[in-house]
Image 1: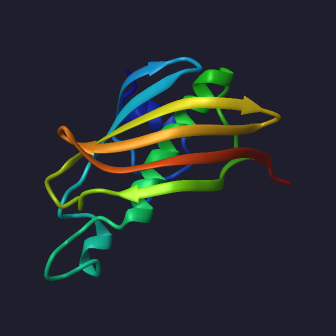
Image 2: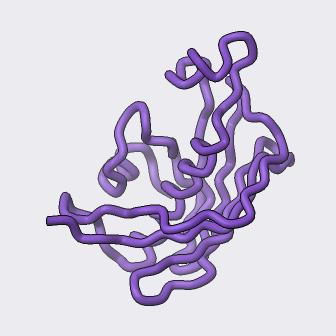
Length: 146
């Protein structure tokens, strides 16, 4: 379990780009279950779309990647510093199954499939209730910046 204060210590993202509100479960080296509460106050809803607000698919994938980063840091037993950046290296098989709207709670389920030479591969799914919203295979890597 991890609250927003612990998440802020692990992820460099801040408003409006921090997309994980709470970690419900974390199993070192295996999986993480986290939440993103989607509210009408999200800045992207102003333009996506004014008449029918829908969370952009790329931001659902970003929320999953942030959850994946929390799992990776927990697995490695590290807290990233200002010189560490966690990047997307690839997204495969992304499928969007259901629109995510204001008032929805996105449950982020991410499993670590492989970790080799600083490269991480995850199976990621986000759901609203029992309904799958998005699924994808995510590849991420950590880099030290100058």
